[in-house]
Length: 301
Image: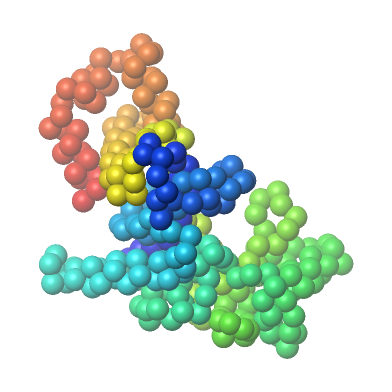
């Protein structure tokens, strides 16, 4: 069995009710707002199982903290707990992949643990030697696009071994997102990995992005006022637990009621609250708690 760990960070906009300056509170760039906003930066590591992201550990870091060092500490702590699986649950630790974006991409993270395959995004300015041609990734990407225009055939996705600073010998995967003309590149130090495996494990990170989106858009974590980082940390924990419950209930509903297979949590909630729903559905969902939580237990076991 293969398990994908995902490390990511999220900027949570916060106005502290105390009005005091808090060391962890600062202006951080928000991808959602595309501008610096005041609040907290949460670095998180979690696990993707069955298409669902579950957070394992997280920390609120200040602007002075190096994000890569924070991620490495979180990874070491999670790996230490996973190594205890045989002792506690008599189960072996599965093959582990770690998917991170370019903000965490450095040699120390790749070498942090020999039992974890790291997949990340290299900087386009980094120089790599591919098939005797030593140039930046930007130049390699442009060459592939020119080759496609000349031959009138697609050469992507393309898996290549390469050597370059600062990662040494690696495998690069050049590919194109749907309906995009630019070339994207991901990198790993596992030299015998298949292109399909590499891409699939990398895109597991989208589950963490959906988790953060549910936390901010649906459960609106940024609306919770805090007096300090400690209080915000507790509210984040409760919010994440709520996200997990909502995701589990959504998965249970999709399994129990086939017509809900493609429905989101929002649509299921709206349907249960306002539409003319079948009484059996409400009975199972709201009143048969034992059956519900037994099904949830089976789903998450």
